[in-house]
Image (cartoon, one colour):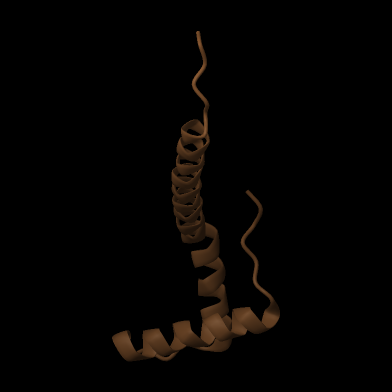
Length: 82
């Protein structure tokens, strides 16, 4: 798996949300550097779990769709004299 990366703007946006959450929930003010450092940790250590779950969800949806297609194709079969 490749490293989870964000554009500079997106990283700043997420870090700002993280700072806001920490300030609200823990009444703790952290700086931009600290929030970006925490975001890097979350992306590296926790992000793969969310990524893998997203892949598992996508696989499940694709499998359901393929099963539906197979059923439709099977329904189109013509009887033979065999």
